[in-house]
Amino acid sequence: MGAEQGVARPPAVVWDESVLAYDLGGDHPLNPVRLDLTVRLATALGVLDGVDPIAPAHATDPELERVHDPAYLAAVRAAPSTAWDLGHGLGTTDNPVFDRMHEASSLIVGGSLAAARQIASGAADRAVSIAGGLHHAMRDRAAGFCVYNDCAVAISWLLDNGFDRVAYVDTDVHHGDGVQAAFYDDPRVLTVSLHQSPLSLWPGTGRPAELGGPNAEGTAVNVALPPGTPDRGWLRAFHAVVPSLLTAFRPQVLVTQCGVDSHREDPLADLSLTVDGHRAIYRALRHLADTTANGKWLALGGGGYELVRVVPRSWTHLLATVLDRDVDPRVPLPASWISHVARTAPNWPLPTTMTEGADTSFAPWDGSGGDPVDEAVRATRRAVFPLHGLDPEDARD
Ligand SMILES: [Zn+2]
Image (cartoon, rainbow, N blue to C red; front, top):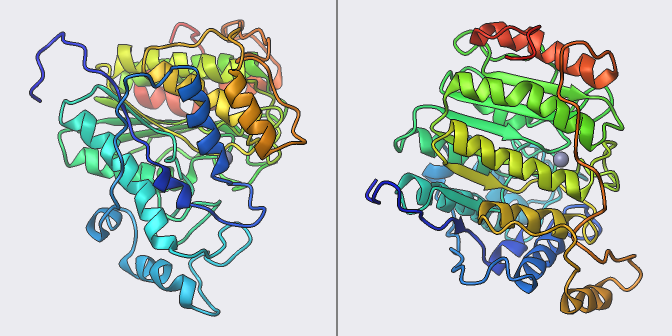
């Protein structure tokens, strides 16, 4: 790791328009326009000034086979020319087959790997790939709009390239089930997912009792939040669970899936966060990377289906946070961006600033509260804290 101690290395941004080819077509919710509008907004605000983005290369078969079966890769490759009986979760409403599906999907993985390589080589302490974060893909099947699991491939690669302890924090509204499954019995990887309760949201997993396999008990952590949880509840739960566990686990790198479908306007789920809440989450993740993971932070995108009003603003805040160029929430949206969007989506009510005016202050969990968020916190702490030598009832832990 060649760089001198104490010399700040600029964060790496992985981006190239070629990732927009991951397009599930038609009116599928995962429309790549959300990535395009994000990069346009970040650019117009100057967040990417002087940044030379790293263009991803396709992940190779051996790289994909870190977490996927060879037979599944073959099925994905063959899918566009296979008429029926695809299996492997392919050809469904959630995971429709599209032209050059393998190529587009392996490019997303290549982007997350490129970000991981920047950190492992010492070229950067932080790296971000907003096209990544496809956390639902399983060893042998597509799921939840995800063909290959770039998060899991990147973590697996980090484990073979200088990192023995990796923490993964997933802020998507859906349970990070594919990443949890990939490392369920691996004590080197702590997976933490905060999501809407599986009682009311797909994929129906992510209960506090899912703790990891027999060799890794306590390394799967799930916070199942009630529908309607607002910024202050989400942040209260996060701070009641995640910092203590990361401090105890002592990761060497923090990998985060930064899905923004927890927003109150997201069409696919029912949490009630705002763009301001997302900004607060990214700042908290950065602080945790700095204080518990030697400053090493690999940030990935994820879900987020309010394509115009939410994703571009929230992920511009993400890019800005990774780059230490935090955008003042009151900043107006650039006229050039507004007029581009007005042409692209003429009937969409457009935002005007980088804020929704939300107050993101919250009362820290003190062990006494009894509302449904407090109950969720208590369930997770009671299940997992003792396995890390922490006291679930003591709010100082
Ligand atoms: Zn999601």
